[in-house]
Image (cartoon, rainbow, N blue to C red; front, side, top):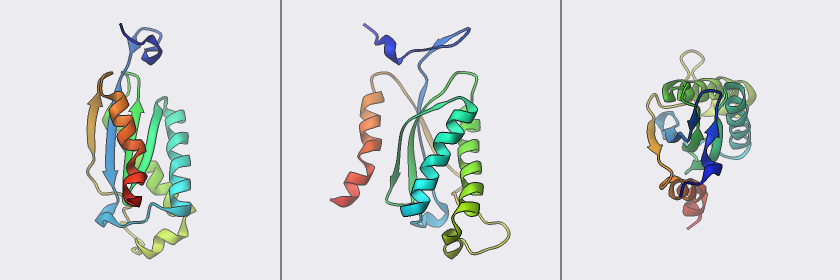
Length: 143
């Protein structure tokens, strides 16, 4: 029997689309910690709310890459979701976190994020396993 709490009801559709998305910082610089991490997490949730998708889980791994579990309606493409998240967070982080100038010192052509990303669609069976994996990212680093 399916868990109906997972389903999202739109005007013309019922869906359960979840994506595990990962991307890293340019040159794998370990800058996603402290104040920058707090601002980043706040921005990601604001962007999700603005564009109509949900961030079920979010964690930073080794201070240099991001893991997200995103639930989105069928009308939003993964490409657009990643473009919004990477583009807006980079722009806002450079504006709100002057400490990033130490790692990304160029005035022109600064890029916070590596240009690539990983995405995997998550079925209902794997959703809990992926959510636990994302939530445990920081715990692994302590060990």
